Length: 594
Image 1: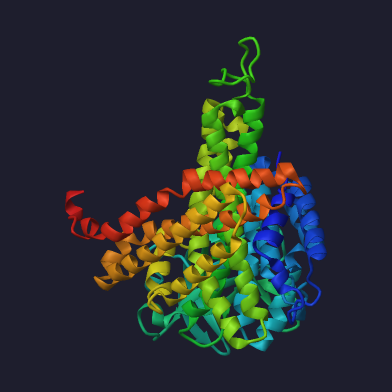
Image 2: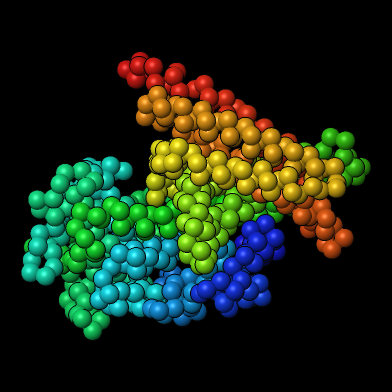
């Protein structure tokens, strides 16, 4: 049974992330802690009572393809109706088109609950939000007025269509064609792996499609973005006939069975009608607006699945009676005790929870930077916040999802053999979580973005500035308690390790792209671990001063932070060594001998 971690999320939002920095900013005048807490409470209730009970049945029933369209599992359509009517599709959208204007950081906190409760359900509104952002940033005023109110209200949903069978992640190789037809275009081609590309939730689906206009330059420079509705839309928003796009199949996947992953065929009967978004040949640039939003959304899915795995493993460990822990007085008269009393089981549980809390805090911090980048008064401050958010997003996406998969795997291990059978539900969490490291760019692609684009564009200046900030904050903590002082010192030492490794990563990039690629994922992993230590050291300092307020809660935060420093942070040394010395042995290896 899923329980939304309200207290932990509030702590991360208010204490660690300091969302009070948004209070009173232009466009966020009404935002305050009591409003955020009320939204979180309502979201927790919906996640626990409506979405979570559908998770296991949805895994069994799955989405079903028919010639007439995809049919969703029983009760999912009703859950979506309640979701839209409850205003959840409007939460983070701009008020101009019917949104509530909540900051990104609050929307990120809420989305954790959706992902933990029912990841397959959560993907539909996530993709719609990405479509909204792309049209809002890049579309014409007519397109905004026609599509955004209906997408934001949940009346329609949206998708992004990138991948093709022959192209994969190489978007420069796409073949989908766009031929001008009067004021519109005719789109023909095939797209694969389209999340919620078809379903029976709504009367229309708005596809954002990458295609190549005839005569466009080759490669990524010749890609344009098009709005292609499933059902044709008149100028007043009324629906006409079906567009020439159909779902020809859905994938049979390892997990997220209730999320239809579609193969879409465009132009079987002459070409699907599409509208050009923005300027021709700028499609990839526009699509990255969607992809950045989605990458943050997927990153939070990583720790959301970690939270779900932890809760299930903890419940099991407290109930499963087996063995007598060494040196423990829990067992009486030689009788067995719950496995939570065993040291190795506690180690696994603490690893899961520590990773979840560190990645949650990092994701919320990144989301806050997006808000500051949109709402701060000074242009220089907005640019700095946006630059920091861009730096953090590949780390959030890559590291958080990898740790989510690790936690889901540990959850099965805590269950032992019972975790490997479907009846306990532990296996579904791992199957569902596994996709998060892959879609919206694999961990390798995130790492290449980090080391190639984000470090390369300014020679590491944004990263070094961020490292300076972390060192300053850690020095200012000055905790009086010995354990918290150790956490701050350990984190500060790790920041210096990351500083040296960043120089090494830049040096590797200077030797060639192949050297940078060879150590990109180790560098991303190092960033995640060190940034996690930074937020956990802050948690240790905050909670060590507040033990008298809520001793059990804050003592738990201190214990978890100190565990992180002793069990997780030491891995940073190994990753740093790989970044510094590990590229040549990869580059010089002969792939033919593998």
